[in-house]
Length: 202
Image (cartoon, rainbow, N blue to C red; front, side, top):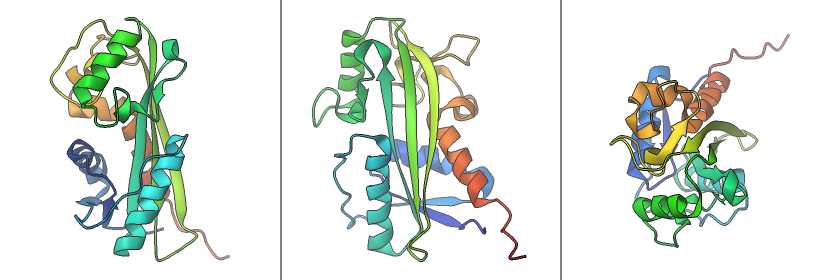
């Protein structure tokens, strides 16, 4: 199928907007922000997919544009998988990244197993049946202190298992982070699907 030249990203998070632009640029796909007048639905699902798909559907229906949306979170084994889908609201409905991060460090011991998860939804309003979900994850451990100045969210305390230098996500370069991150893996799955050769009619 032919990949669209631009995708609308259903988010109000400027950090995600920048990251998706960076991740999709190599495929020649531009990302545009959600128009100010579009109201996204609340994230009330119990899974990442249940939060991601309604946002993409809402954005596509409101604009007539091909839209994507993600829901991402961090899961701590020591907390039974929490905060999970509540990662952005872990310390309360209006919690900041700093407050959420502080709560995770308070509630889970250093060295705890962590997992970043991303569900990425794609909706083409011109083809009602064309709705897809893509997933990515990244495993690591919780540091005892914040390190690094890059990234956002829980990145300063997330030590990815795949980095032999034992750096946090916030200490990695953009390229290094994109190679192993949950969002990077979900985006690469989306791009692979978008760029697959058309199926011959025979």
